[in-house]
Amino acid sequence: MPERRDPFTRNWLAFGAILRGLGFDAGPVRTLAFLRALTLLDLEMEADVRTAVRAHFARRKEDGPLLDRALHAFLGRLDAAHRSAESGGDDLARDSALDGWASASVRQLSVLDPDDPAAEDAQELANASFSAAERLRHKDFDTLTDAELGEIRRLIRLMRIPAGLRRSRRYRRGGNRRLDLRRLLRSSLRFGGEPLQFSFRRPRLKPRPLVLICDISGSMERYTRVLLNFTYAIENATEQVEAFVFATRLTRITRMLRSHDAEAALDRVTGAVTDWSGGTRIGEAIASFNRRFGRRVLAHGATVVLISDGWDRGDPAQLRDAVARLQRSCHRLIWMNPLMGDPAYEPLTTGLQAALPYVDDFLPCHNLASLESLGRLLLRAHDRRPVRRQAAWPVGA
Image 1 (cartoon, rainbow, N blue to C red):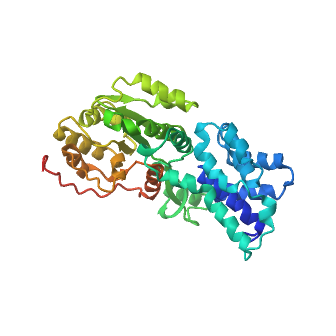
Image 2 (image 1 turned 135 degrees about the vertical axis):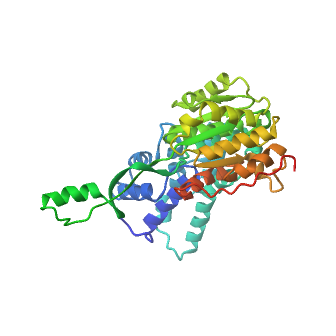
Image 3 (image 1 turned 90 degrees about the vertical axis):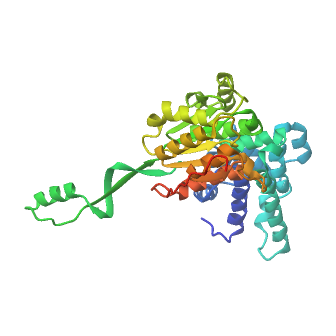
């Protein structure tokens, strides 16, 4: 493969940066495989290059057209006027991310020297190519236009949130700390009872179960549709996920979300939930979860993610007791609040103050970047439970 300082490699690495800005999985592993494929292709045959792009970066059939347009913009063959005439309103955000590359071609960039002033212009174009998508990642869901909401929903469905790993009770060969006595005895019997070689074992690792409980009350109406897209993406990309929604009552939606059509799945959820955009009784909903589903879905050390703004019409003492029991039953309890996007926000509601001492992590969920932070937290979280030293706050204090 060409070296990184080679113009050919440098240019196509910039193309990978564009795809990452558009929400595609174009990390080092996929990009390296793509570069290796390019060395075997005739770059004059754009159809072959397009096929290679789709093969390495497309996850769904509907990703193909956007990848084709990104490639055309990168090659400098996409006419801006023609594109704006044929594109619909939902393509406005992605068009802005591609405009910077509409005038740059691979042949023009490949002859640039790193010390040439023209190389600086190329770098500026590369930065502009995904700056719009980067701004969209940090924009509050409450301020998005319809076109931006459509693009955010598409980016959310491309997300892959790892639920972390847990130690299984079963073991596998390997490690250097725990002796595998059974294997040691078997091997020693073959050689007259002498332990000629020590054998070790280590625990197997399994995906940790993940439970999502999402508030769909009236106070969350601005965020509900986007957060349900987030729930759908996790349900269809991660193993052992359970999903619930609540307003005044709890509804399990795990089976409703198991579909290849995201909009159809979310429409089923909307039609099945009877208290959509109603009042909020967080304490009753969590108590119902503990009573009906707690033993079933939390038996293997699940991580629970509760998404709510904390506005509650119920009894604060009931909310405190329900959250405390939920925390004792799960591996980690994470509360994500969309109101935390406001720098001046403080959790002043009585119910939230009563529940927060029993929450392990209190995180925002007001934009795409905050949703991505959940994945980083789950990756960093240690296998053991977090240290919990609660001192319950007096209700009404």
